[in-house]
Amino acid sequence: MPTRQIIEQSRFKKHLKHLLQAGRFTQSDYQQVLDYLRAGQPLPEKYDDHVIKKRKTDRALFIKGNWLLIYRLEADAIRLLDVGRHGEV
Image (cartoon, rainbow, N blue to C red; front, side, top):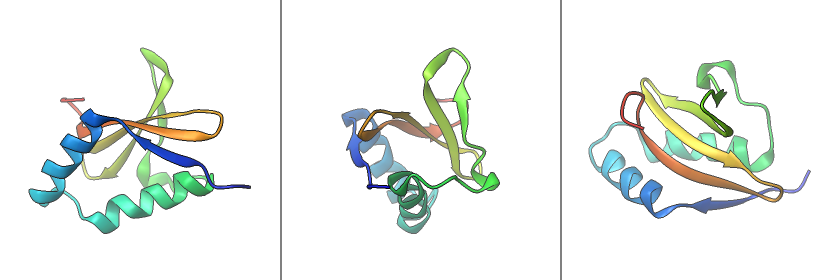
């Protein structure tokens, strides 16, 4: 299976930068999730990957603790929409 392109929305980039600087999770934690997504591999249960009920085209997973990554699977890409605390995104 070919790897998918990663597209980072500007809102996502801004929030990711702040969260990494604040030490909420590490670059390694983030990269591990990206590697799974890019390769099209099933995510381990610890990430609790799921469809967002009110936004059926979008998915969410927990990078670490209560920190969510919101993304959308597209035909040949993965669009990273936002990242933050569960109650904030």
